[in-house]
Image (tube, rainbow, N blue to C red):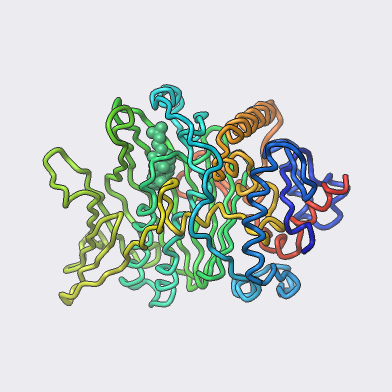
Length: 488
Ligand SMILES: CC(C)CCC[C@@H](C)[C@H]1CC[C@H]2[C@@H]3CC=C4C[C@@H](O)CC[C@]4(C)[C@H]3CC[C@]12C
């Protein structure tokens, strides 16, 4: 096995200078975002250093090696076909991308869990800031995932979009299936740890050939507000998300008001757009933390004019337990509700549709939980998000969340190192932010480009995919960056 496949490199300097990157624009641009360390200043190659990082990385290597012995195919970039324009359409990509092995549990922690600290110490920082993703958080409150990976949780039920792509354009059925997909996005997050704040320029990809889609995301803006951008492509559909998360502390709860633009566009030219409900994190100071989504939101078929008007019901003091997490909805066209069509269910469990002919149909149901939810309560889907297989380690860009040492150490239960790395990375980030705040300096996201001017999410997307990520990946461009640093 070539050692490249086992190597994990955390950038500490520009991986490629512009002059060095005679390999096309793709690499040239990735060099630009790396002029400030995004990811903590250490590097680990096959050479075993005596540093403490070694432990965590060896563990990653060990898990990487064991999945290698299963004889899985490598990333077969040579078999990928690209069109004359150099683009790698999803269908071609799916043919060449090997399936990834899934793990069933997180590795056992290497250190005893740190003692809990007071939640108030966290909240008081948040009160003035208005954005949860700006608060420096001690690792005790964190789970080993970044915000970007948390966005990818929404893709668990991507089959609903495949089903929707297969039915008639602008039909009621398609609207219902997309609505079920939108509701399913709420089901996963019942955990009450905070994901790591994404760093400016951080990316996260998920290649999911088994389910037939690929996902890429990037934190694209820090000022005036924090914005994450997502693009997922499947067979016959693309899903996009751009979000800003505003927070408010009410005294007992933290309320999240996401400004989110979500869209699914089918290849037959039919698009759907929606926003998100409020989320309130209750009992943050005393009692048991629990999440509640509440309020109304609409999912609009742009071409069909059909609108699903959904409502998450907030539990009141009087409401019975059976009403907890309830969601209901109707479908409207031109302001008039369609007769006999109703949506009902629970956001953490299932969604049914009552249809005009009197029948009822189950649109979506949650997957069973993991066999052992003891560490961070992750579901099988969520468990895979931070998994670093050898194929991945050899080909990911150095900006990918999976290569963050703080997240990795937390996952391995090396809590003291996680804290040290986390602090370093936050300091690195603060430096970078100070630098780009200077007049004339800006940050250009790598995979998305700014198309809107005001810096706030509105009716249209502020950022648009530049293209080229999967093509660069297939051409081995990210692996080439690692080779480069190794030679220095
Ligand atoms: C209160 C603070 C200190 C700790 C809370 C930690 C947990 C409960 C918070 C931190 C980040 C939060 C997530 C941030 C963003 C979203 C997107 C939104 O559309 C649905 C809720 C969801 C998925 C939140 C669920 C609750 C969440 C996971």
